[in-house]
Image 1 (tube, rainbow, N blue to C red):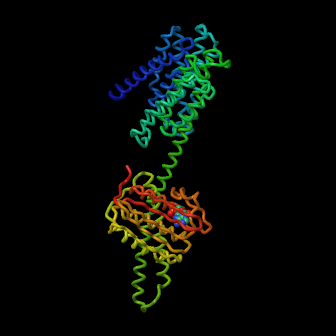
Image 2 (tube, rainbow, N blue to C red):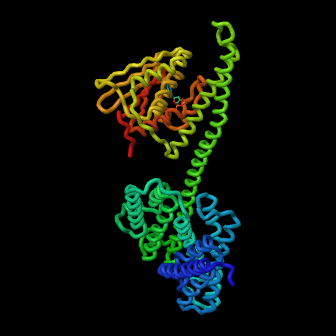
Image 3 (tube, protein in one colour):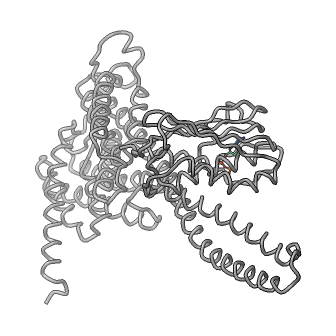
Length: 543
Ligand code: ADP
């Protein structure tokens, strides 16, 4: 009795048959690309298929690869015993490569530069096994090779290398689950279509002489494809990159094989196989370079994700003890004021009470910093939710100004509020807490950087929009810094050490944008800054 359940055996048989059929089909395709002695081809796609099958499906799939290689080569007119040797080489190549990759800590996601480099090196080594056994079989079978055994070995080897470099990563990228692209809307497809057309047009002008003008011939080079391939890497990640590489290699190899294009002319490579060898090298180097770039970008994305996750976890963890501390301070304050009732009236705050009040203010500041960090992680994860309600702007501004008046007075500033509107009352439908958060940050910046001058808050309603400006008379902001202060963690170096994480304006701009509004600054160094918040009366988040 078998140890495996029937369903597992059926799945195993289906996988074997699937790999066998695909092996034969891709081999037939490969043989169309100009075969030497009927077996060594410019690109040998089955190498990539076999590699992907063994790496993803396990070593148990080797019989399908052996049988596939045997059947394909048996049809090319070489003796059966030589076919057997060739099929053994093809199978060994895939099994050895996967074993080596496993030992070197490689991951099929190919999202680390390490994976791409290890994969490329392993492929270079393992394919030499198949090329060597194949050349040995052809030599022993006395099959005549026009360009010599050396070139034959080389074409076989590079053909296998290209098959592995182009086909296996495409299979890994399309079989293994990838992070969802940011959008799959019409724009995505239009962009993909534009890119594919660009690759075909430029590829055809480089490798097919599509535009036989002298100026095009002078300017064209394999480098003409780089911007388009980099476009594929940056916008369409590994999946798009592997498809773009396949498309370019199809155009490059078929163009050169038909005697056209950049690699076809010249005295450097007079024979057809030498010319194809040049295309092979070009494609191999291009494929590894572009996949390295895709992996480097994936690593960068992962690092940013890890940072955001860390910020989110750390802020949540910090909030818990902070809340407990706040409660304890509130209790201490209550106990102290109860004791104080017993002392004669008219006493100023005693030292312990002042210390607890100061500690409470510090925990409040700490709480606001942690809230900002939490907001950043919400914003990067697109989890900012608005709770809309009707808000009276004059009331809100007066309330905020009175809350901050004491803090302003400490730095010598005063806050003046003016509201002006043809249509009264001036109300809006916004997330009250969030809009308060934005204006509070603008006011506390005006206090921090305002040099103790007058701070003016003006609200002006017109039609269905409201503009709120916060102006100070302080140090101002240089033109060069006016954009970047709205980015996360960006601050302007100042001679006076002023605390902050550089997040308030970033969060503010995102909150305002989520309401369908804008937040801008105009300022000259030394002459104060004016921040203008423009909001629709009825928040309408952008689509
Ligand atoms: P934070 O104030 O916590 O550093 P913000 O995002 O609110 O973060 O501000 C970013 C930077 O913009 C500040 O560090 C400061 O350099 C500059 N800035 C903001 N508001 C003003 C202002 N009213 N006057 C001068 N500089 C300002």
